[in-house]
Length: 123
Length: 496
Image (cartoon, rainbow over all chains, first blue to last red):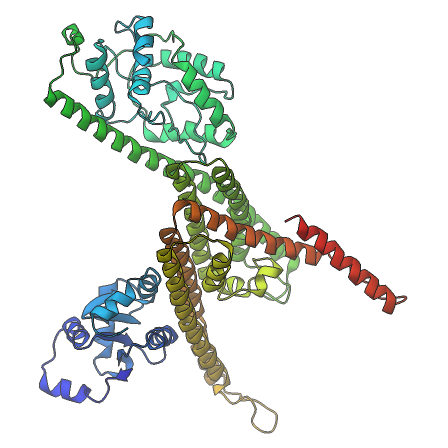
C-alpha cells in the first residue's frame, strides 16, 4: 500500500484548480486500486486491511492530509449519496463503493475477478 | 373433464354458471389453480375468458368473478390472494359456509366491480390472522369439488369487460393468429396475476407487522415509563433501566424467534413431504427474507442503542459466548454447515470454500478496524493527564470536556462496525442460498436454525441447573450433585 503524499505539491503546481470530482476521477484512474481515506477513520483502516490481506497493493489518498481534501470529501459525499465520504474504493478507475459494497462484492465472489481484471491481483 | 361439467350446467350466459366455468376451464387447461386474483385491470381476466369462450363456444355475458377463496393464510404454500369485499365471508373453516356466503355476498354486487386495494387487504388480513394453516388443505379439496356444484349465484350487473360474445363463435374455428394472441394474453395475464399476488402478499405482511409493532411500541412505552418512575436513579446504572430502544428490540426479537420456529417447521415439513423445487423455493426465500428482517431490526436498534447489540444481552448466554460484533461469526457458521451437509458437487464445494475464505478475510478486516477504534478511544480518554503525580487529576474542565467530545465522536463509529458486520452476515446467508440447490439450501437453513435452538436450550439448562448446597457436606455432596447435573444434561441432549 502506498500513500500519495509527496506528490501533492507537483499536482498543485502543474495543474490548475479543477473540479474536485474530476480530480477524484483522475486520481482514481491512475492506479488499479485506489482508496480515498481519512487517516483517523477506523473503517478506512479496516478496508485497507481487507485489501492488504488479499495481497493487493492499493493506492491510498488520505484526504485529511491533502490541502484540497475537504472539497474532494464533499464531492465524494455527493457521489455516494451518503453522509460519510470515506472509505471509498475505485478499482480499474471505476467506482466500486463504500465498505458495504466492497464487502458484498467480496462475499458474492465478484471482487476478486474485478481485481484480477484490473491487474491488481495475480493468481 | 371441465367441458363436461360446463355442458352439464347448461351454460347460457347466466351468472352462476359463468362463475363456474372459468374455473372449470382453467382446470381443463391446467393452469395453476392459485391464480384467481381479481385485478383491477381488465387485461387479467381477458386471456382466460377469451380462451374460454372461444374454446368452449359459450357466451359470456358476465365479467369473471372467479370462485371465491376466502382464506389467504399469509405463510402457506398456495397463496390465494384476497378477494373483493362482496365475496368475503365472515366465518371460515367449513367449505359449505364458504360457498353460501359467497353466494350471498355476490348478491350485493351491483355497482363497481372492483374493490379498492385497501379494503381487499383489510378483509384478507382479518381472514389471515384467524386462519389456521391446516385449512389450506381443506381449501384445495373444497375447490376441487366446487366445480361439480352448481352455484346459484344471482346474476351480476356486468360492466362487461368481455368482448362481444356472439354465439357464432360456438364453432371452433381457430386460426393461428387467434391462437397466438390467446397464448400471449394468457401469458400476460398470468404474469400480471403473479405480480399482483406477490404485491398483495407483501402489503398484507407489512400491515400485520405494522399493527404488531404499534402494539409493541405502545407496550414498550408504557413499560418504559414504569421503569423510569419506579427504577429511578441516574441513567443506566448496573442492572438499571434498559433503554426503550433496547426494550423494543428485545420484544421484536422475541417475536422474530417465534416466527422463526414457525418457518423452520414449515421447511421441515416441506422437505419431508418432498415438495417440488418451486414450492420449496418459496419457503426458503421466505425464511431468508425473515433473516433480512432481523438484520433490518438490528440496524434500527443500533442507531438507538448499539451497546445493547454489542454486549449481546439480547441473546441467550450460550450464544453470547460466540458473539462477534453483535452477532454470529459468518465463517463459523459456514464451518458448521460444511461439517453437517454432505453431497456437495465439486463446484459447490469450491464455492463454499471460497465463501469461507472471503468471509474470514472480511471478518479479519473488520476486527482490525475495531481494534484500531479501541486503541484510538483509549488514547483519547487517556490524553488528558490521568494523574498529576500528586494523585490529583487535571482540573481543566474545558480540556476534559473537549476530550470527552472527541471520545464521543469516536464511540459513534461503533454503530458502523456493527452494521457492517450485519451486512456481512446477511451477504453470507444470501450467498449460501445462491451456491446450493434449493433442497440443500432448505436443509442448510434448517441446520442453522436447529443449531441456534440447541444453543438456546443449552442456555436455559444452564440457568436452571441444580446448584450444590453451600452449607453441609461440601466434598461428597458436590461431586454427587455435579454427576447428577451431568447426567441430567446428557438425558436432555439425547432428545435433541
